[in-house]
Amino acid sequence: MIPGRFVEPLGLLTGPVAFHALREGFALPLQGGDLAFSFVRLIEDGEDLGVGPIREVPEEWQDAVHEIARRPAPFAGLAEDRPLVMGVLNVTPDSFSDGGRHLDPRAAIAAGHAMLEAGADILDIGGESTRPGARAVSVEEECARILPVIRELAKAAPVSVDTRNAATMRAALEAGAEILNDVSALRHDPEALALAARSEAPVILMHMPGDDPATMQSLARYEDVALEVAGFLRERIAACEAAGIPRGRIAVDPGIGFGKTLAHNLALIERLPLLAGLGCRVVLGASRKRFIGTLSGVEEAGRRIPGSIAAALAGAARGASVLRVHDVAETVQALAVWRACQSGVAPAGAA
Ligand code: HH2
Image (cartoon, rainbow, N blue to C red):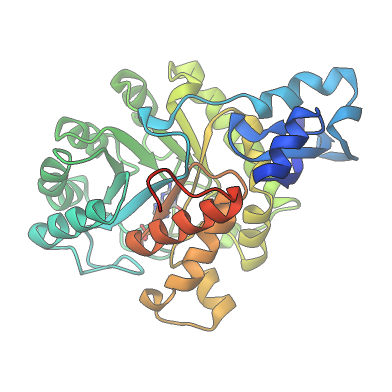
């Protein structure tokens, strides 16, 4: 049982329909953005109390409903009028999709610059693969891989460091990284929470059952995966706040593929708006992952780009603020067209 109250936004609207529904009071803006929600599901202590229009929500639930409509702080001070694109740069020999391609720092730096030219807002740089069964690396090895790359690319763009190790976080911040991205939600290393609090850096808290990618797939058992992930993230936000990290510095991520089956991944994407009530920006990392291969029958991760774009757009349509992707140019193009079609308005400057 997941304790506490959750409000799940449903009936999402966009464009002119959203505008009219908001004006007439039939809908509220999802996290203060362009999407609006018109229905909600009320959930208490794991029990589904039913679905209804927002105008009929009982008085004692109104605060929770309005929490979903509140605009969170902009993530890392970046643009908040569109989903941000985070380019993935794995400086590893064994990452599931780009392992070995960027192990040479010069190749990694060139790939980072290419992602920025293609429109990436943030670069996410990691030196340890988290794919199921990957070999753990020492902090020294992790730092040797990523620090030269971070030092160079941080001059050009906001960099997040994808690590579970506090010593690597500290070294990466000194090298110029601005954001901490921890797949263990600051649980793996006992020093990480205090370090993140002292650093004043924005943090991404991701859901993973257990705190070790080596064993996570054996823990892929949930009664209601979306609710359990939301409950976990709510607890981690509370732990961060208690340690001195304000909510405005936190983003949350459902951890697609981390201790999840195909059905779990799909449920998490479809019910992504449930995370909006946590009061933090939502990050989604579905790019090239196994579930896309399973759905499409494409074994080679590098050939999963169309499926990755479909998943990214599904996330954007459900309120994701940051999309973590390997294929930046393709995602940026898809997002530009998707946003224009959603709003029915040509972007400023387009003829
Ligand atoms: N996924 C991976 C690694 N880090 N961080 C966040 N916040 N969200 C994710 O979904 C996420 C993540 C795994 O993908 P990748 O980095 O491409 O592979 P590998 O772990 O094998 O290096």
